[in-house]
Image (tube, rainbow, N blue to C red; front, side, top):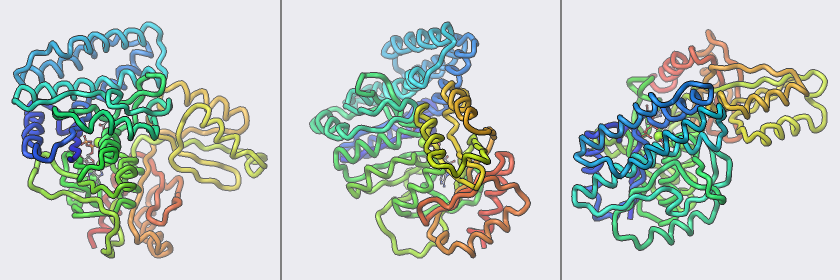
Length: 442
Ligand code: ADP
Ligand code: ASP
Ligand code: MG
């Protein structure tokens, strides 16, 4: 048995979906469980639409566009769109609810974002059936994926693994499962964080002890940098679980940060493959490797917000940091990087929080105890590799490259494998290009 996960770029239109069906067809003897993301770009559109509707923009025209994208795909695949009509109507109703109430909670945002994967999985499954491949579509909750209620970034509960085993062990028809979406214990829809379909794939792989987890995307595996920024970024044949986890955490979009964890615990190989170049062997993620590679990658996490909390009197006072973190906990806002100096604590937050009420409420509460500065449009640059251990030499090389830019926050992290720092968004891509030259092209 294997898990095959297809990302949004691999499902962007009817031609790509045909290609995916083709790839699945070559693997039928391995009994694949297929996991899919939403059609490329749809999750962004849904989130944006929900936020706009809550601010008073009538959503109907834009819902229609999203519905049309899917109807067009369905038509080009020679299918009848009946199987999605009910879901289309539900999407209209929910967005109109948000529009009328002018209110968007993380919980209702998750309901809206879940439609992308529901649509794409139903389309792929129907298409496979039309090709004569017996298939069945499942939503994350149908196979028992249960999470906490941390909406927009929920965490799996342990019982998920047994549930999946019960539901999928003896199925006959090829399962096509929604990535990214699940239920909490009360049956509310939750999502696993942006890019979370990778995580779904690895949870299912681990629950069923599969031979391999294949992550099919639009690049030949993991590279020294995002090829969209650095054209000549090099491909790795293999990298370690730890390196992959660090890269993913700080933005290398190619893999969702938590993907690796369930796979490591069972030592299940994960391979990143390219749907545009099926023969390429991609990148395997392995437990250990003896290669002495100093640097693996430079990654970028965009649209980060930095919160600077200044308090000359309070900062070192007993319990002050705890009070700050308690406020973030209360509003369920997760923090990526923390750095403290004598008078300030700086934190970085992911872009999911932008525009949501929770963040505004948290800031209001922080302002009661300290001066708060919010810096928007920042990026985190993160360098991953064993070479980081040699701190003094490498830091000098990195900061020499960056000397003409403003670096706002540096964190060497808990692990010896990465160093990350925050810069202005407008500088980020240039810095990455220059760092790539320094670390990989000499
Ligand atoms: P999918 O839709 O398949 O999940 P994603 O867009 O989430 O695809 O991830 C694939 C993208 O990740 C690539 O198109 C590439 O631009 C980006 N990426 C970022 N960092 C890297 C890296 N180090 N190696 C390869 N791809 C990367
Ligand atoms: N569709 C979701 C997203 O865009 C999940 C995924 O693509 O993995 O974040
Ligand atoms: Mg992805």
